[in-house]
Image (cartoon, rainbow, N blue to C red; front, side, top):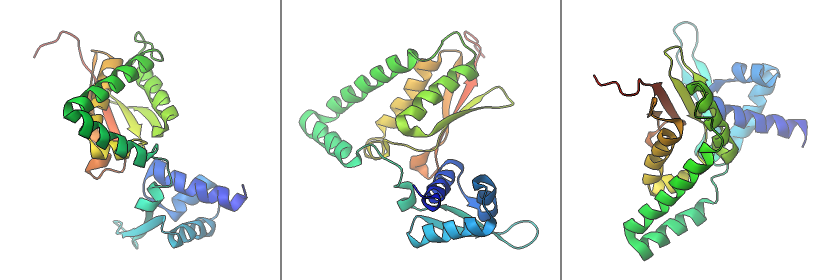
Length: 216
């Protein structure tokens, strides 16, 4: 892979992981000049992969912030979307919604078992979430965890490799919440704070510690 192609792919990756960025911010992250970053962005724009918005700052002239287009997001794999949609449709036709519910329940049980094998249930909450994020990252979710000052932990997923399935049947998304709650334990509460299917750039889950047995 040439240096130019590598830098182009890195540019798209950074926009996927970090959201909208200025050319100067990307230049720092890529360790290139601002002009070099702008050339990469303009080339990607010419291919329909990125777009920009001029955002008014408090002082000075507006800053140009770049982000991925739908075509840019599509550069990241969606786990055989067409086949997935076809299978969901066929399950509904053959077995109805009850059959689809059984399919989702089976997937949920399998995921819970797989994640529990990787997570030490005696570890600190932040470590458990980090282990879950590592597992999800390996599945293509481009995931990470971030401990917060208030004691909560964020599970950040910058990509959804089952987005097509989740769009066709949002029960998959509700199932994800149930999976996370089951594998992380009763001493925390999992809530979705940012949602890709509601216009968010990514999915973010906020995991809040709770006192087991407490009643308010």
